[in-house]
Amino acid sequence: MQPVKDRNLTVEQLADDPSFIHWIEGEVDRREAARWNRWVQKNEQNRRLAIKAQQMITGFSFREPKLPRIQDEWNNIRRTIENGNRKKAEAPHSDTAKKIDVVSMLFKAAAVLAVGIIAGVSAYMYQESTQVQEEVATHTVTTEYGQTKTIKLSDGSQVILAAHSRLTYKENWLEQPTRRLSLEGEAFFAVAPQTTEVHPKLVVKTQDGTASVWGTRFTVDTFGPGTRVVLEEGEVQIDTRRKDKKVTMEPGEMATFSNSSQQIQVEKVNPRVYTSWFTNELIFDNTPFPTLINRIERTYGVKVVVRDSIILQKNLSGSVDFQSLESLTDAVAKLFKLKIERAGETLIIKQ
Image (cartoon, rainbow, N blue to C red; front, side, top):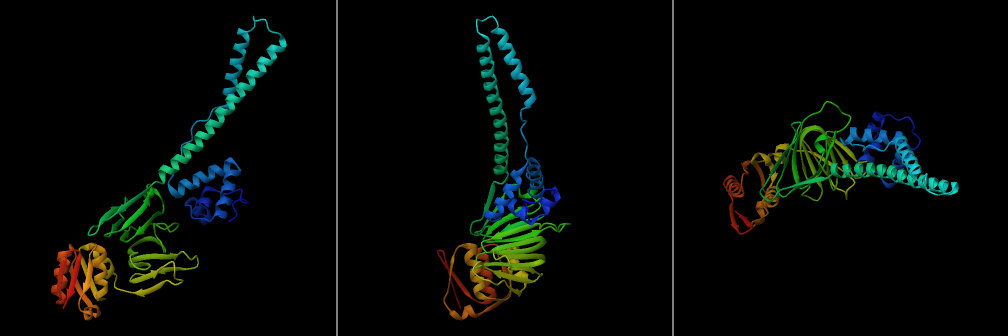
């Protein structure tokens, strides 16, 4: 879209235009941003259309301060001048002096009026800018080792943040048609379905790309060398930082991608192996033993040392208690006939 050339846009057209949406969300390049800035600054109609469309997209609302009425201000100035002239009528001034005095007062009054109008406009711009900054203030939720947190949304959706993770989102995300957040670590998402497909319900951003969701259950994990998304039900679209790389996932699939790779790897998996952690149990389905080690280390912040290399070749099946490190190690030791000892912040596993 060429915003400079479009003169008869409607609010709905702006709100549905991908370029305008990206500009509102600060996700366009400098050249595209400059084009939209010029279009908005071109006239008052464009500016008001942009504000209304922005409100539809983000939920922002601006209150315009009351600007001075120019005619009323001029009437006040005229009355002030006339009253001043009457008071000076008896003073011994020449007609020329009177004219100069009146002109001087007019210029002073005009200057005051101009400053007042500019101040009003400046107040509007400052208030609008301040309002935006307040609206888009970011919040961060973090978890410690061995801790999870649940974030409940007003529409029934929820996010469960895994241990040693960080979730960042904008303050007003509950009012936005698309909720956008950034994740470092791991989280499970249960997103309530929506009736419209105009905008995704939720977008999860990582350093490798985004996962766009309309309604689904899935996990996002950034602990590895890239980002891993496992879909339990619904639909997720993976979009890497490379514009031409997109994949729409189906239930039972795992997508792995990174900003250093040109490919999105998709494979069939048992989703419960990757989503069961928030239910206080771990489920294994022919799962490699190193996967369990990775889960223990990143959840509880301990180092796992395996004394016998043959253990690393084991594949695990079954389920174990995941409420605490002690209950987990006890269950693993009994189920897989292993000996697990703890020395400070180190777990030692052997036959």
